[in-house]
Length: 311
Image 1 (tube, rainbow, N blue to C red):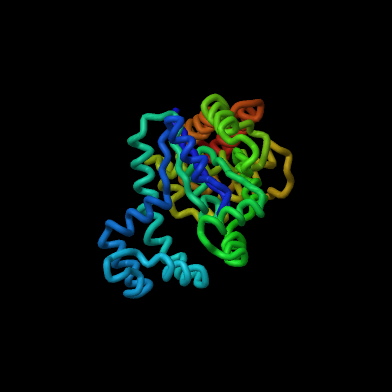
Image 2 (cartoon, rainbow, N blue to C red):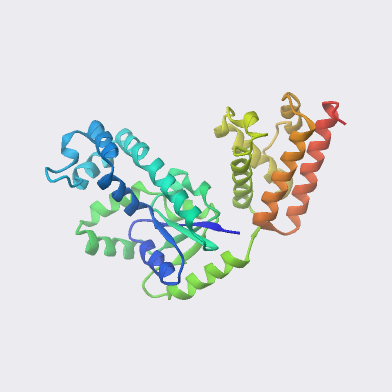
């Protein structure tokens, strides 16, 4: 089973070093930042969209992208940043998906700076978070980018902290310049090739819910019931529900069965729902909670069908 793994980390953490080592180990790595630059350089449509958003100064007279000019604007203007991302990110994602499809490797890596901040982490089977002490990161950036300490700290403060990213339970590689990284990478790759998640933390439940609905939204039978759903509200509720069922967390109060009784569901919809839910569990998880989740899903399906007179 092919797994898609994200490599991310704060500015100066050294994620590109980790990516380069993975390449030397024989694994395909997609560099999102480089791909974005390639798209800007080679797509007349994209170039025009950027000019429409930022003006003629976006490119020099010889056609080169005016990175400094654009960076200064988006660093101060969130709306412009969102606009630029809307131009670039969908094209990068499309090319990355093609890169994944064309790869024969069991592990395919994608390197990007803001996977968590952009919400793109949901599209990966797992994440590698590259970390380093703040002072080490600042020193690296000062040497590499020729920027002042204050300028670098401004960039650092625009990104999520490592502590915020840790809440998503990534695999961590410490790149502090002293701890050997090759051994860490080898251990991570071994885990990715041989291990599945234990469904015993909130981050695991979040991954389960997001992965399940990703499959559902691509299923011809079930997708019509969910396409217009407000996922910003629905997914957190489902995560709370399964955390209540599997982890004993409090806070979920909605009657999950009554919500589904109102839908025009038939027997085949329940069968497909269970099949996708179980296959998602089998693909990504091991442990006692996997069977508990399957049994609870069967109970929900049976009770709901009973209330709808489908049994």
